[in-house]
Amino acid sequence: MNAGPATTARYDLERVRGDFPILTELVHGRPVAYLDNAASAQKPRAVLDAVERIHCTGYSNIHRAVHQFAQRATDAYEGARRRMAAFVGADSHEEIVFVRGATEALNLVASCLGRHVLREGDEVLLTGMEHHSNIVPWQMACEFVGARVVAAPVTDRGELDLDGFRELLSDRTRIVSVVHVSNTLGTVNPVAEIARMARERGAFVCVDGAQAAPHRPIRVRELGCDFYAVSGHKMYGPSGIGVLWGRRRLLEAIPPYQGGGDMIRSVRFSGTTYADPPAKFEAGTPHITGPAGLAAAADYLEALGFDAVAAHEEDLRALAERRLLQIPGVRILGTAPGKAAVVSFVVEGVHPHDLGTVLDHEGVAVRAGHHCTQPLMERFGVPATTRASFGLYNTREEVDRLAAGVRTAISVFRG
Amino acid sequence: MNFSGGFADLYREVILDHSRSPRNFGRLEGANREADGFNPLCGDRLKLLLRVEEGTVRQASFVGDGCAISTASASLLTEALRGLGETEALELSDRFRRMAAGEIEPDEAELGKLNALVGVRDYPMRVKCATLAWHALRAALERSGEVAQTE
Image 1 (cartoon, rainbow over the protein chains, first blue to last red):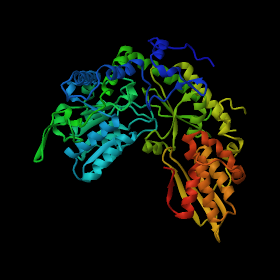
Image 2: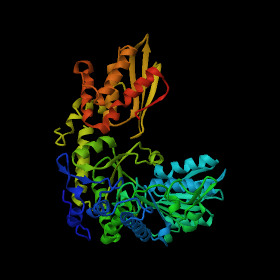
Image 3: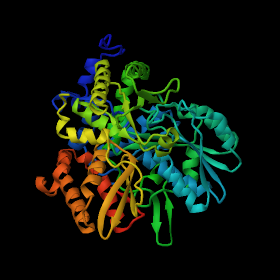
């Protein structure tokens, strides 16, 4: 099988791979082909160094003491906030709340915006392709006040059914929360159009951007949404850190999330006044070193350039779909035009978990399961899929190893 | 075929045979005990049906859709159960689950054909596939009608 040119990347792929120490690891005696980037991406040296630098040169708690280490740690933390404001296209760093990841960001919005606006009989409109993290927090918020969650239908190609969405949008719709890029199908949703329709109806708009941030520039103002959630670990940053962007006036209006130190102006037993955003939403000692690592990941991505990253990943996605569809019995779920570099598929006669184990033995790391999108699995009538998701460091040779592994699994299990 | 990948110890011939042609697959006529097994990690579901008479499992069957390991394990379970008293069946279930989890060493004489599943001990992420039917067995014998979960 001829893979064609080793790379079509507009950057030096070998040099880029050299930036990621883990990519030289062997798995079952073979070089790892890490195709599980949608679950979590590997970290370049620059990210690891940024985190270590704080531990080695200026670690302390932030926003508290007057000593030099506290100053250095605070500078790194707040500098990263400004960096991430630029990364998502925010008007101000005060619109950037550091959270554990997209899950915490979505929980924060569901809890705080939910308490602010949701009343009995109201509806929160989602799509049928949401990750559990953009379903369950809304169910919890709705249950509390007697509101309900409704989900717009998904087409056979894995696109949002915009007519179906429009029909469900009503005067009862108080909040619309949608995924920007589907983690299971790779579908890129027309967020700007969704936001425009929702806002015409007076609904607030929240976007789960966990899968978008590693692949495309985020411009929250152009999207026209009210909140945008980002996970650090999926965009080559550290795990346990992420960003919630929110419109300033909304962050001011909604109640705080958790209570504790750093989120207050003054505390008396007779009553407490809260700090201004973003501190209002950052109770307690945060992930002190995470933001610096996340900022380094943003630097890394933008230095390579999103156009170049997207072009490289698109080449791998197209090659992977060609190679897989050459294999009898392979069906790809999610065939929306312009989708991201996520290839979810099922193989007749081979269960995704067995395929995952065989591929692991070939050194190929993929995800097998429901990808935390059980309603979507039900929509497509499968209990699980195998998912290969590509990152900026993957190669065409790795795509060929994936296809070869699928053929091996078929020969084992179909007998 | 020769598995160059080294997973032959997990996918032994007996496992592949039982996953391709599961025994006692279907709804058992005259079943008087049943339980559903559900693995929330992967979404696999199966239903185990038993015909128990005078404290003895006369016959067992299963339906469901799962991976090669969970299918083969359920198939082997239905064969191993026949003729066992309820207490013996529960004891076997416990010992199998502890063996699969690596808590006790496999006893080849006792396990018989179930020995084919010992390879799962080296695959911690697949242990729940092997034990799904056995969770359902306990539920069927102890509190028929509930969904047994591996979690």
